[in-house]
Image (tube, rainbow, N blue to C red):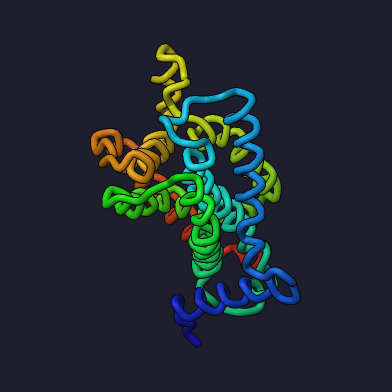
Length: 254
């Protein structure tokens, strides 16, 4: 029996959503819990103690877009990495297209990000944040970020079936990458002599471009996006190849 991938992804997303918020008092409002905590901590540390430059806007407004994008990036990769092993019974007992499982995890992460953004938007506007037509550039930037999330998520999901250490290594890598990405601070605070190394992180251009579009109302530097596009496409292709070659072994290993 052939299972439609789209239908399977939808059912997995719905099951995940129901299971996470079943019998909870606040329901989907919990989606704002982690971003709000991060916003509060970042505001205290970077905005009050360290007083990082914020391009003339209140720090919560400055950090808003970085926290939202990072939530999608880290949440998507972390969930996808553990997705296949988390559905081991389904993989082992049912002839289903395995690709649907990490894709459903990524879709859930994207939905959570969209819902948390709606909830957090009130804090953004209350802090003096505004919207211009340039904010539409967030859509292609999120699409580019998705290349990395899908590629890394597929690689992580495949390797985690065979090496469970991958889950812990992914968490460590994400924590380190958070400090090397302009989520809580601007690229401008990085010493000029080190920027060539700092810019090797393809997420830098995406996060800086998103912040410029949302807060400054400026079109992102398109030339700076060429590098993350190239790296993102390579990440996606590698992820697809790795997952397709290892998927036939999942049922007997997971």
